[in-house]
Image (cartoon, rainbow, N blue to C red; front, side):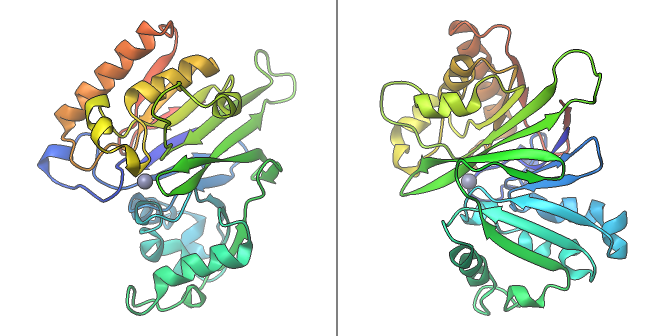
Length: 293
Ligand SMILES: [Zn+2]
């Protein structure tokens, strides 16, 4: 799997000279599989730039298809959709899987974003590409793009969000691990005490890469806990408890400059080391960076 970060910021885009190194676009990650499949996770403003790149390939000729996983429908995870060029090219097709419990509810939520008061597109039906919206069934593995994908619901402020566990099988006869696993867990609300949720740890267990929101420095989380995000301490604690190979910090607070994020990443490294996770690699998500699993 080749993972690329198109948007790593939380809550609202934060462009400007102080966020140029990590990037100001909101959540969007692409996963290209070894067999040529494409999974897109979340549709924040980073999706627009992914779309521009995809249009240079088969998606520009109406011959592209992809699976889109949506963690939840807060603005910073859906706002790129109306600006995603490949949905306006006839012949392309997208299978969208997300929360809501029922496909009708999820489609209605995404339709709401297209309402004429919010968007000139007016309705999802104005997309030229095929755009199928389906609710993810929790605990039921989905096979897509040659991958096995499972979802778990976690608390996120007054609502919930989905985490995704994505496994790619190894090549037949390939030495070493038979499969590789990437877990995407953003916007993870935390209890006030008691460490990481054991169910979450079980879901992340043994992943080669765990992407986890590290929205806050711990001091800022203390005053904003009801927003339902994790600090770098929470991300590090989950990574160590789950015995993952690498931890990706993600979804940085919109008020943080690049220097603030540097401080957050350094704190996360110390938190990993202090918890016995010195062997866990730390990868700060930065817009445009790639990660091979
Ligand atoms: Zn978010």
